[in-house]
Image 1 (cartoon, rainbow, N blue to C red):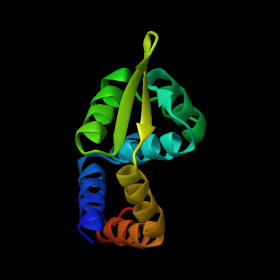
Image 2 (cartoon, one colour; image 1 turned 30 degrees about the vertical axis):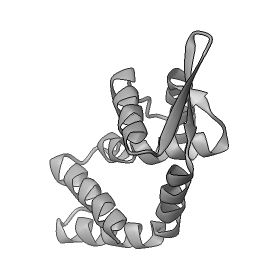
Image 3 (cartoon, rainbow, N blue to C red; image 1 turned 90 degrees about the vertical axis):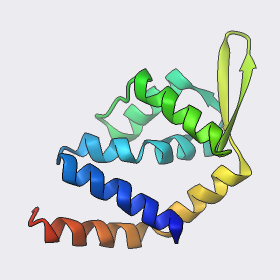
Image 4 (cartoon, rainbow, N blue to C red; image 1 turned 180 degrees about the vertical axis):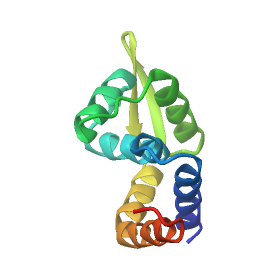
Length: 123
């Protein structure tokens, strides 16, 4: 449940600060990263390209990807390994669990987001 509270908090803050979708997506950056890494380990620049392909319009900057990766690493959700000149990131068991919890709670998250938007009279 603490996980849902954190997600709800970040989404609420994102919405209250500004309404463009890119700000909402920025709050979900860690989940995009975990989702992509759950398929295959990869490096930072490739994550940027894959997120742009997934969303169709949003291309996170290196200035947001690398701090997010560092935070995920500090929390034990991803690990890194150096291979030649690149640093590859890989999801951990703990990261897979968090991602699974997120996917299982999507409908509840969407419901809360809709309720928040409705209370703000956003259509």
